[in-house]
Length: 136
Image (cartoon, rainbow, N blue to C red; front, side, top):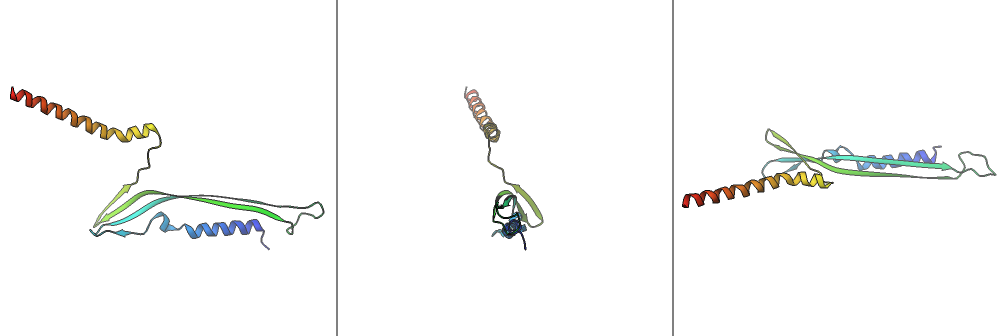
């Protein structure tokens, strides 16, 4: 006879195995009208815990006939990582950036746009100054 804790763990792991397979990590290919094939790639994280105890009573010795109490739980997190884009003989990997989690991360993300806007502003000023000099 199997112990209830063993059965509980086996059942929970079986359910997790049914939910997660290789197609969860490397998704099914998607074909676009222009002939490109896109394959999603994800990261799967699984946490699992279980526990239990037999309860012996003062009047009976500890054995497998004692009452059992226990529980098991699991958590699954699926995070998109990238997309493989296949077009003819060309294969590209397009990473999925995680959202910025700190103010410094957000600032670093905005920096290229700020530099582009600054350069554009300075170019407009130079062009206006050059026009003013040409007219004079």
